[in-house]
Structure formats: C-alpha cells, structure tokens
Amino acid sequence: MIVDPARVLDAVELPFLPNHYRGKVRDNYDLPDGRRLIVASDRLSAFDRILCAVPYKGQILTQTARWWFEETADLCRNHVIDYPDPNVLLCRRLTILPVEIVVRGYLAGTTGTSILTLYKAGERRMYGTVLPDGMRDNERLPQPIITPTSKEFDGGHDRPLTPDEILADGLLTAAQWDEISATALALFARGQEIAARRGLILADTKYEFGVDADGNILLADEVHTPDSSRFWKADSYTARVAAGERPDSFDKDVVRSWVAARCDPYRDAIPPIPDDMILATSAVYVEAFETITGERFVPDLAGETVLARITDRLRVFASAP
Image (cartoon, rainbow, N blue to C red; front, side, top):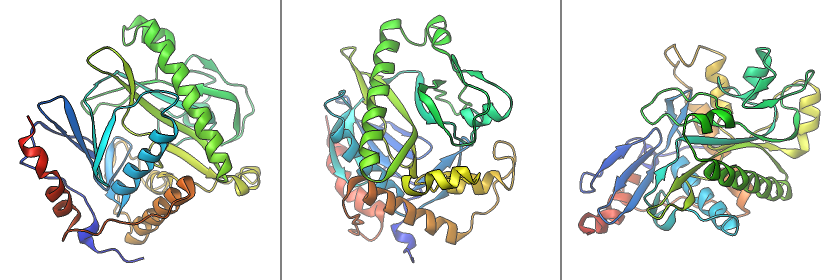
C-alpha cells in the first residue's frame, strides 16, 4: 500500500473560520449561529498524546460514525446536522458533560484506566463494580459494565470514577446519570448485536454526551468507530484467548501495544513508529469500515491535498451569520 503524503491530513489550518479549538485528533470551529464544524484529521492519539498520522483515518472515522449515528437514531438523539465533506461534521454545539462513559463487555485494555490494567495490578473493586477472581486477559465479563472517567478538557489525565463519586462531586445530576447510563447500555447492546452479524465482537467503547441550549442530552463526538471502540474478529477469538494471545482487532491497539512494549508512553519519548506499521494501520481502518458497514471505502481524492479540498468546501461557512 503506497499513499501520497498529500492525502494525509496531519495539521488543519482554516484561518477563515472563527473560534478555532484544536483537540487531539479533531479541529473545531464554532460558528456564530450556534453550529460547530468538526474536522477529523488523520492524527492518532493514545496515552494522552499524538503518536502519528494514519492515511485516510479522518475520513474513515467520520464516515463510520455517520453510519452508526444513523443506525442508532431510534435509541437517542445526536448532534449531527450535516456532512459538508467526508472529513467534516456540521453539528449542534453542545455543552459536553464532564464524564466520559466507557462501556466494557470484556476484561481488556492497555491504558492506565482500563479494567485489565487495574485487574492485573490486583484490584477487584473498580468503578463501583466488583470483578471475580481468576479471570483471564480478554475474557468476557459476566455482564457489560460502565466504567466512567473524568473528562479532563485541558489535557490532564482522565481519572476513574464511581457513580457515587459522580453524584457527590456534582459532575452530573441523578437524572442525568440515569439517562446517560441507560442510553449507553442500550447503544452498546445495539452495537454488539450489529457487530455480531458482521462477524465481529464489540468488546468495549466510549460515549460522550452533551447538553443543548434547551437542556436535552444528546450523543456527541463519535460512536462505535475503531478509535472509540475495541472490535475483535469473532472467528478467532476463542482460540486466541485460550492460547493467551491478544484477539485479532480492528482498533488502534496495534500501535498502542507496539509503543507500550518499547517505553513508558506516559513519561518517555515515543520511538519513531515504522512507516510499514502506519500503512498497515491504515489498511486496518479501511477493513474495519468495510466490515462494519458492509460498504466499500472510497477515498475522496478531490483537490491537490486533503486540506485544499476541505478548504474549498468550507469557505461557504466563512460568512455564516
């Protein structure tokens, strides 16, 4: 697989749009009329830092989330208005709730807040849940659990929370917690059901919710993408777990695991990630999109570069009221 560097969107610079905020992998522009433009770059983030840029990742994630937003619209409202470009979402501007909701169906993960990391450190009581002794890596949990973390908006490390702490700290009201926890479990069940039909296991995922001007809670950010979720291939799962091997995945754990094996990713400099691994990761994203949606991935090759294409299509918003 050979990719023209012009088709990689690492940095997003759109000075004609107002109120720019750069996130880890997305660039946000708040329009004066209450709408927001979110441009998905190809940056790959893990361990609270940027690791590399993966060709076509931004388009794939935006289009995968679009597919899932449509598949779950009957379960909850979301922030989507339109898609002016394959990498760009036009959405309602929300006040993001300060709790990130992670639903987990398996004992998995590599980050400091993952239940597998905590479990291997000897913890059994976590996130308000008690897990049984004797579980193996990547084993299915007795039932899906919610593992909420704080949503650190200024680059700080997210911290594990229990429902009692969420309410005691005033992060959410009891009514908000009841609504988003029930919605998250319903979304996860839908995601697992659809994934199973595609020969996949949805092991865990994160959700973000926000409140609109009228106080309604809406699903925001992305949903069931390879960046926000851990997908495994079902046909090889049992044999690989029995052998103590990592399940075949459709997520960025490929890069995360490579980095974590070579340094402390929270403290050390990240070693250069080989080009062949980056290209292989891009191929995994393409395969994930096509497997999840049943559609063929077609990269948008308009414009001399991805940024030039997006610039041309978003100029109409420069004069938005």
